[in-house]
Each structure stands twice: as structure tokens, then as C-alpha cells.
Length: 512
Image 1 (cartoon, rainbow, N blue to C red):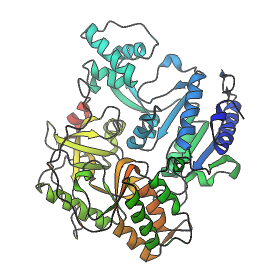
Image 2 (cartoon, one colour):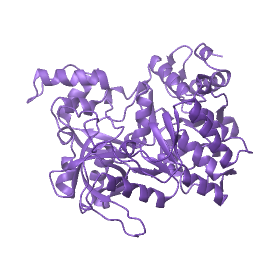
Image 3 (tube, rainbow, N blue to C red):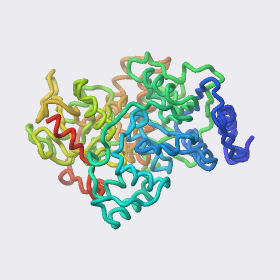
């Protein structure tokens, strides 16, 4: 066992040593902090699996710190210096901005898969600033930028390690310094992928093209991606390449939410017994709440988790109704979920602009108000490092018992959005919120139907995923009721934008 692994539990230490062995064969010796050129051997893929609380994130974070201490260059996805291309590299990835932000809050510089697949092309003049910020050049003299502006950029970068954010803090717009996006041509060395239960086969193949050494972290108890026949990509690896963490660490901290989640592994547990368990936990600990109604105030930032689409649509319309939202407009502060980008192939650059700013399918967004042109929206992308975006938008408000959604406004093409006050448990995977409301009548319906997925009752898999989205408090809602809001929707609680928020001016010019 290595010295680093001495602080681990037995299964974490064994996993650490197996990963260290894989890295040594790739030319990176963590014991001696020794880096060698890639040996050019066969590609390697390994997975670390375990349920919530088993220590996967701790292991990921410790391996990242060990690689950084050994001199491996950390690739963020927002800028890569050409002077560093001879270095060994590591990228830490998650499927969505929200999942990446969970890691960043724990000190791990994660980015999205998309930001590694596609890289920005910088204007040569402003690339000099990026080189200076990243320690690869002297402080430049840029016409039109004062010393104060450059110092502001340096101060931002010191705290956030984001080149686009630093340039925005200097007063530049995205269209000033990013001239386009291109598919990554040169491979990297090592990729860590968190929440890999969300990966589909196409994403997995894309990642293997980029990373000869790939380490997946995933929870086999979650729900497989839609269309994957209940199978996760790491379940197709050879058994010796899958390292399972069995010990549940956070239960030692007396976490009632995780106790409830792990109780679902009991094959004899029925739904009514499970609910009694939740009710008992709620009487003993305020981190578990037996809810008699949906709390509408929480829905603007953490959606109610449901199983059925019909339930989702009813809750969304109830949320809008109690806030007095008009049918022909959105209120500032309404939550949205990105449902993809509707742009023809000839507008590929505009698509990459939107996706690179975080508007990928499943992204959580807060509507801030109308943009400068009809059909445009000002948006705050939850979890993005530079969250303020202005983009052509197509917003769809689904109605109960109606096949076609109501569209309060729309550009001819751009990012499409569904309302985000409620989401399905499938779409909630990879995200966590401080407070989570789970709509229990939906899970009871799944239990009565008797459906199974991957050999386990579907209601148990749904309940496990939903419950483990809660960081601090779980609200198990047992009645189909909605509270009244304590006040109007708000946007002042969102993180302030940099000095000059990045806007997709090129997109606005072409997609309106």
C-alpha cells in the first residue's frame, strides 16, 4: 500500500493502488512524483464504483492532488497553452455543469465533457493575456486595455482559474477574444469522469479517442441512460478493471438521508415499510421531513423530483399559477431546463458557442429577462463558471392533457427550454441540491405497477437516485398539495456576473 493510501479505508487503499499501478504503466509514478513520456502501450480504462457515501469523490480528489503535485498539467477546457503540449495532462470531467460544479465546490477543477471535446480558438492578441495569466509569458501591453484592467483580470484568475472569466473581468466580451470552436485534434493523457453512470456509448467512445488512460467513477445503483437497456458503460468492462468500494463512510457521520437510501438494498423491503422508515426518521431528525405539501419556494432553485411526465407538467403549471405568471411571458426567476439546441448544420459554430457556455441538454437555467432582440433571453446557467448568457431561445410550457406545448415566445432557432420547477428523476441524475423534494405518490405508482430495471424493483432505483440528490435535507412529499409562495420570484440570490458578462453576440447576430 502506498503512503497516500494510509489515510484510506481498506477498499479505498486497494483501489488507489490499482489506479496508481495503471498510471505507472502510463508513465506517471505517484510514489516518486516522477513523470515520463507516454510509453505508447494499449489504451487503459478502469472504473471505481460504489454507492453514495462510499468515498468515490474523496478518492478522485486525492488522486487529482497527487497528480498535480507530481507536475501533471490540469486541463480546464477554457484555454490550453501551446507551450504546455509536451507536458503530461489530466482533465476531470462530468456530464453536466451542475455535476461539475459539485466537484468544483470541493476544490476539484472539473469541467464538462463537451468543453473537452471542443476547444476555443483565441484571438492572437488576447491569447497573450491568457499565456501571461497561466504563467507562460510576460505581462502584455494590449492596446485599449489599461494596467488596472489587466490587474483585475489577474485577480479574478487567481481566485477562479478561468481565463474567459478573467478576460471578462478586464472588460472584454466573449466575441472579442474567442473567434470560434473546434473539435479537439490532439489527445490528452488522463481523464477522470465523475457521474459516469450517465454516460451513453457514444460519449464513452468519444472519450476513449481523447484519453488513452481513462478512469470512470460511478454508482451502479443509479438509473442507466435512456436507450442503454439498463446497462452502464462501466458494467461492460472486464471484472478486473472495475474497483468496487463497499464501505459506506458517511453513515458513520449519522446521516439519516444515506441510511434511508441504503436501506433500499434490502430485498424484503416493501414500499409501505420504506415509508414508515422515512416517517420514523423525520420524527428524530430535521434533515428528513415528512411533507404534507410541495413547498413552492424551493421549486425555483431545486426542482421537485417526479417519475411521471404527467406529474411534472401538473406541478409546473401549479407553480406558474401561484406566482401569477402570464401565459404569454416568463417571469424573471423562473427555472428552465435546456432541452437541446435547434440549429441547422450550417450554424455549427453558433451551436458550439451555446454548448460551450453550458447550454447543453439537461442544463439548469434561471430566466433573468428578455434579451435585446425578440426571442432572446438573458439566462443564468446554474453551475457554469461564467453563468451569464444571452441567447436565442425557444421556451416550451407543457400543458396538462394537451399534446402540443404552449410557447410564450421563440426565436426561429436557438436553445430550447422546458420549464424546470419539476423534473423527472432520470434527468436529476448527476445533480445535487441542498434541499430536495421527492414526490412520493409517483413512486407509490411505480411500486404498484411492479416494474423492474436491471433486476431490481423500479421504485427502489427511483427512490435511491432521488434521495441521494439531497445534500442537507430530504423532503418526502406524501400529498398532492402545493404551498403558497412567501414572496415573488427573485434573481438577486444568483452569483453576480463578472465586470462585463460574456454574451454570445455572434449568435445574436445570426440566429435572431
